[in-house]
Each structure stands twice: as structure tokens, then as C-alpha cells.
Length: 460
Image 1: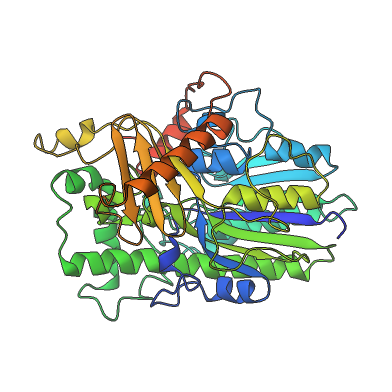
Image 2 (image 1 turned 90 degrees about the vertical axis):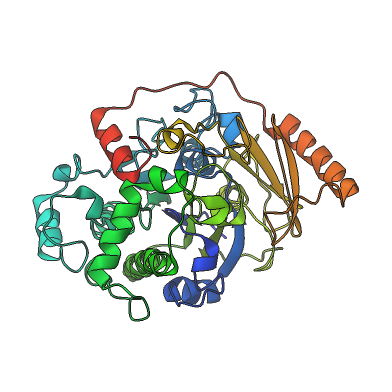
């Protein structure tokens, strides 16, 4: 096929088993399921990292987290790393990025190579056209939390969509384009727009408003809750999941609206990717959010690929990673992929997937509970290799082997030959793909970036 337009949509914090594609009991993503039925849908895409920082760093560079260093040993992308956007540009593409997450911004260097870039935050939405802001205010009860000064409650997909539509009008040229969008939903706090707040509350013991406020309280007090054993009762877990699922369902509708708009335009061949940067924890390992571990709840995400008129060698149940899809699209675009991770899905399959997590600290938990047990977590950094049947993970503090879907019982002693084989595979992978390009670069985040990271719960 001729060099197609590429629209890549990354949603934040969507675990695969809470989606329709992943077989969830709630039909949270009917549109993504429809999109997959006409293209390709996968429920075992394994993210490269456990959070936006390392995961996005890999999506947008094609290098492993420990190699590009973003979110592992550094905050900012080293100048020596070639970005995906630069590769598309060299192949003759116009490139653009619209991001709602400050980890995908100039603060981390992940804006490099985009011809057009905008980071949408509470401080920067005033830069949008007045007409867009007026439309948002008029629809603030349908597409957000109503009139409130608490920025953590507000949803942004409506603003993302309206901005994307304006940009798409500018990109309807003879030059193909690569348009990357990072939506922040359904990242915590799980506070759905008012039009969706009662989507899944019929069978829970809280009112929609009580459930949303409870989810917000969990967000603001997450460290204290985890430090004290994450002991929510069934009523509280049900409320938390209902709000998270409602956020997913709302975002699914907004992606449908955006893709419908794209398809209404007189565009040439356009490939659309929808995925998530990582998943989310709901009590696994006594944790919330998505830090500290590399289990399927955190790393297994949905991925939909539509509009690619090529045969693929992978089936819907096969393992794949974001770099496989990105490499395939770059190959189709005629771009250089030298040095990148990933396989061309038109001719190859992967044997295993690798995820990484940077160093972690537990000081915030000890402040609430001096007896908090951190011994069950790997230190300082962690790398996990996942096959169809096993997850092997290794750090300086030790290693584990899990026979999936059980990710609690270490079976190393029972299956030493499997542990040895996967340890060897991981050692080879680290030698080939995991060595850093240089010392990780630390950044000084601006006040605006710090405020958004605080809203998202990344910093105190």
C-alpha cells in the first residue's frame, strides 16, 4: 500500500480485562470492539513499562525503557536518541502530537521531532481558541464534572477531540501525516463526566455522586490506604471499579466520535491505532494505581489496529508489544527502523514480551505505617519477561517465576529448568536491547507540569 496516514491514540491506564475486547463482564468498549472486528484487535498487548513515562518513551522512540532511559534512570530523552516522529519526518510525513499528559511534553523531550505539538493542561487550555472553550463550557455537564474549580474532577476528551478536529483540517494535504494523541482518561482519579457517572451504579451500594467522591478520596489518600493494607470492603471496591469502568466507557464513546470524524474527511489511506500505555491495579499485591509491580493488571493492555490493508502473522490471542505495531507502520511508511525494538507483524511473531520498571521508594508508605512490608517488592529496578504461559522477573534483589495466570506463587523451585531458560533469554535481551545510550538525564519540571503530576497522583 502507498504510505498511509497514521493516527495513533493512546489512552491512559486501561487494563485489558476491563474492556470488551478483553472479555470483561461489562461492555465498556463496544466501539473499540467494533473497530477491531473490521481490522485487528488484540487483548494481550504487553506494555513496555508500568507507567506513562517509560511506556510513552518506548512508544515514541522504539527503544526499551532502560535503553532510552526515560522513566528508568532519567526524566528527559537523551539528544542522541532518534524519535519515531523524526523517523516519520525523514520519510516525508507531517507529524503532530496532542498530549494531555505532562510526561508526553517538552518537559521530557518526547515532543522532539513533531512539526506541531501541544500539551493540554489546566494552565494551557486557555491557549485554545475561544470558540472551543465556549463549546466546552456549554457541554461541561455532559463531558465533564460540571462547574467546579477542582481540576482533578474535570475530563478532557472533549477538548482533545475538538482540538484534533481543527488540526486534522490543517493536515488534509498531499503529504501523509503521523498524528499521535495521548488521552489522559481513565487515569485516576476515576471521576466520570456527569453524563456517565451513573453508568454502572445500579448494582452498587452507593449513589453515583457518593461513588465518584469516594473514588476521589481514594485518589487523594492512596498512599495511606496502601500503607495500611488496602483494606477496602466489597462495597468500596465495587464503587471504585464502577467509576473506573464508567471512565473507560465514556472515553470509548469519545474515540468513536473522533474516528467517525476522521472517516468523514477526504483523506487518503489512514491507519488508526488505539491502545493504552499501561493498566491499573485494584488490590493486587495490596496496591492501587500502577506502580511497583509488572503484573498483567499493569502491563496487559488492549490494542486495536484499523485501516491497515496488509496481512498479519499474529492472531488476536498472540503476544505483541507497542514497538511491533510502530515498527510495522514505519516499515509500511518506508521509514528507517534501524536500531528499533519490535518485529514487522506482516512477517514475524514474537516469542516473548519484556516490560520494565524503574527504581522505587517506599518512604511515603512508612510515613503512614512504619510496619509497612516492602520486602515483597523488587529493588531497585525490575525487568519482566512474559511468554504465553510464564512470567519471569528479575532485579538486583532476586528473581521470580510465575505460571500464568497465577502471579502470586513463585514456582522457581518446582520448574528450575524453565526459570533458567527464561533467565538466559532475559540476559540476552538486556545485552542486545537494554543497555542505556548514556547516563539518564534528570529534568527540572515547571510549575505547570508539577501541578498536573500532582493532580494525577505522581508527586505530592
